[in-house]
Amino acid sequence: LVQMAARALGVEVRFVATDWNHLADGLAEGRYDLAVGGITRTMARAAEGGFTRPYLTIGKSPLARLEDAYRFRDLASIDQPGVRVAVNPGGTNETFARAMLKKATIVVFDDNLSIPEAIASGKADVMFTDNIEARLVARNDQRLAAIRPDAPLTRETLGWMAPRDDQPFLNWLNLFLEQAELDGELERVKSTWF
Image (cartoon, rainbow, N blue to C red; front, side, top):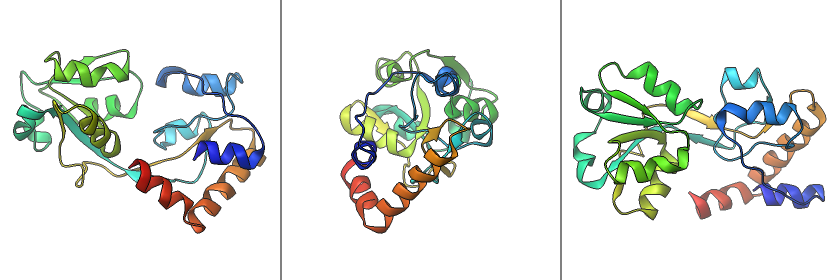
């Protein structure tokens, strides 16, 4: 979808790695023009940058080892003493875990991409992530299972984040997403990737 937007704008995409703690700062400082890739639209984030209209509705789902999936069917079964819940700092998954869990142990991993391997290898028991990511990770690592991804624990939307003061760019992005939805391209992208 980002590549399609870039072609429509006549620019080339260059991806820049960042993390949740530096996402808004990178936009404000001009290190990149647009933040994409699983960015949940929240009021706190909207105070730091401008969001496009949503392009996907998601929800939090647990991801666990396949052999432990039966243990973690709901929040009550996860929020137990001795259960280690992995989070990455600064993201909505950490916020959700800290708000919902009182008995489980929260274990912070600096690199979100390392958490599935930590779960598979027994360094943590479960993580919360969006249901799309849970499905993709479980599909790519047969040691893991997405738990109830069709009945997520929350409902949230994803959007692209741009600098707050660039309303013309946000307007263009919103029109692009609207057109992609109207001509069926957005649905084709969703069915290909999700």
